[in-house]
Amino acid sequence: MVFPKDFLWGVSISAFQFEMGGRREDWDTKSDWWVWVHDERNIKRGVVSGNLPEHGVNYWDFYRTDHRLAKELGLNAFRLTAEWSRIFPEPTDQIEVGIEREGRLIKQVDVDESALQELDRLANQRAVKKYRQIIQDLRRRRMTVFLNLNHFTLPIWIHDPIQARDSRLTKGPLGWLDERTITEFTKFAAYMAWKFGDLVDYWSTFNEPAGVYGSYLVPIGFPPNVFKPAVSLSRLPFARVALHMVIAHARAYDAIKRWDKKKAERKSPSPAEVGVIYNCMPAYPLRPGNPLDERAAQFHDYILVHWFLQAISFGWLDEKLDPKNRREERSLKGRLDWLGINYYTRNVIRGLTFPGLSLFGVPAIPLPVPGYGALGGVRRLPIFSAGQAPATEKFSLEGNPVSEEYGWEVYPQGLERCVKMTERYSETFFITENGISDSQDRLRPDFIKQHLRVVERLIQEGYRIKGYFHWSLLDNYEWQRGFKCKFGLCEVDLQTKRRKPRESYRILKRIICSGQVD
Image: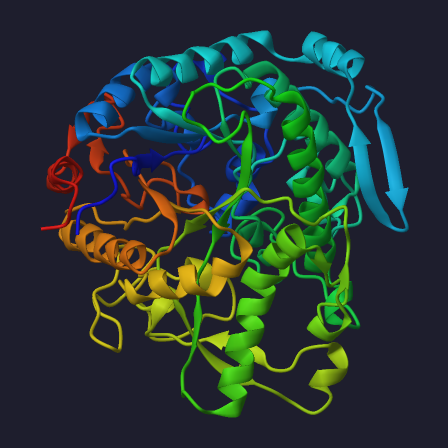
């Protein structure tokens, strides 16, 4: 099969992971993640690697080089993030906007023209100008731009992760635990649409929101790395974070639709196509047919996939985290023009239960099983920081290869599962991240081919997958793991910043040029 002529081939990057590495004045020191990875206590305890983002690949200065590499690869699309803390390094709380409530929920945030003018006076115009230059360079190269507004990081005035950690979530600023963040994020989204709408038609509010709220349930090194018990599942901090993020998506969606009034490309369906980029790690029961494992796997997928997407697509809000008690919220419904799927691997789940568990609101505890999926390269589950367990094996228990460092099992079948389990939520899909940590480029060539064959098959079956974005063009700063993971189609010398395409770069180029996987 040949991929459609209008298929979008792209790469994805983020701000915090790629931008820094140049002059000190270009470092973004006003985000929660900057503070988090520099914290001595985190470094000493191994919560973070000790690698620092200011030694990174310096996309901020080398963006033209990187865009040239992308174009030579044959790409016609590029996904990036504009860093909130760069645009607004200082608080925006003082700028008044209209807020309408319905019960406990924020139903509307009215950011009008006067508020936008005030925001413009507060904004870091040097950063605004730089992001416009970056996007204009992409446009000159005839690349469709996907602009994401939040990729994990928050301004330090929104979230102080050290204060939150040390107070066990009682003192802030508390980020997504605080309802205030909904309003401030909506202001940011409105401002970006107003300022960049002439250059951008494809917007995403969040990258991997479940990764953020899930980190409050299972601490994996993301700030503030605190698990705080509660009397029921719906009273755990992660439930409040999830609720605030789903409302923030809807309010940001409305703001972008309102203020992006101009098409950047004639072929775009509208001036503002607004989606969300969602991580999908589908759960497979360890023992198919075993009722406990089946219930646990279903619960895993409900909490980490369906809960968020059903709210912004159908308006089904489930504050109790119990599907039987969900209700329709019109202020959330229909806020999804396209869905981005980030897929790397699966989870294999064993169910755990004990007397009284159902009173807590959990049908079965889903325990990821070492030797498969996200734990494919390990053979035991550490009590703490399970998500940071370095790989000790090269193959999963099923004999599939696993990636370096993370130890994620190569399992292309899971991508098909992700698309089919989320097809009800959107008519249009993009694969917005897919890649592997592989410094020797030993696994990446086949990884790309295997996953693109899945995409080919799904398109043939009628699924509206409109593009594929590889993670990533370059090796980058991989959050709490620093520079250990090598996801790039191009390797980067962190001393000289020289980019060198790997063999997988050339293989993907051949696929794009021919329009099919050989």
